[in-house]
Length: 241
Image (cartoon, rainbow, N blue to C red; front, side):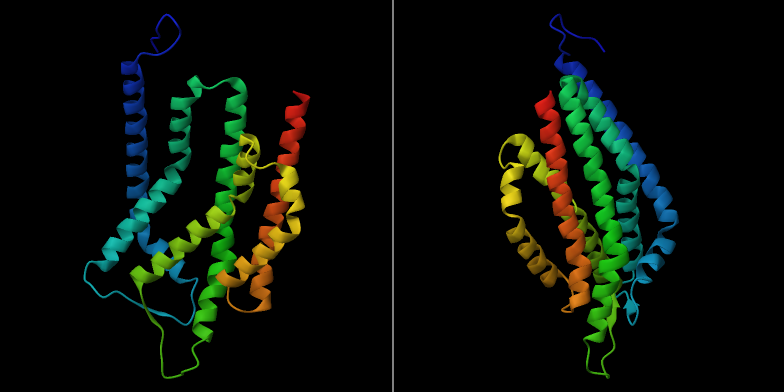
């Protein structure tokens, strides 16, 4: 791409490059959303299979098609995420130094992997437990759980986002360490306090039984310890350099 004498790209080149990247991202999301819409019925059935003891309804004629479109778009964005992040990277990387590229690549890769792990954890562990608890907590036999499809999908997506973000803890702590806001030693000294906070949070977001609390708290404690280990590796590498 054409550059000025000082090696910098002119503003018009930046805008053209940005437009190119945005067009690629838009078309990719559009294609994957269309493909996802073709399988939206299977996707909805799969999400409904997480619950037992519920009867699902939709209270407006267009509700089913709207939820199918929403799921298709969300799936399209998720499936397109490698292309999205690649194009963002290709746009910003020329302005970064080599060490900055390495650090950002590590943080980005770790963030994506951990977010997906959080979604998987919510799908297989948390969501089935929570839905089962809500059904079993109904002590009135005359009441039957009828749930709108819109409300159900909204809850499921909220769990995916929440636990995806929770699993970003190592990335957040590493960024704080890199920025010099909080060092690893500070978190090591706060380990006991952090574990207590994790147990409290786990007790709030899960059904009130010991097993659910343990199943949720243990991965979060592991994430915290993983954060400390990653920060240790980063500090060790930076000292050598």
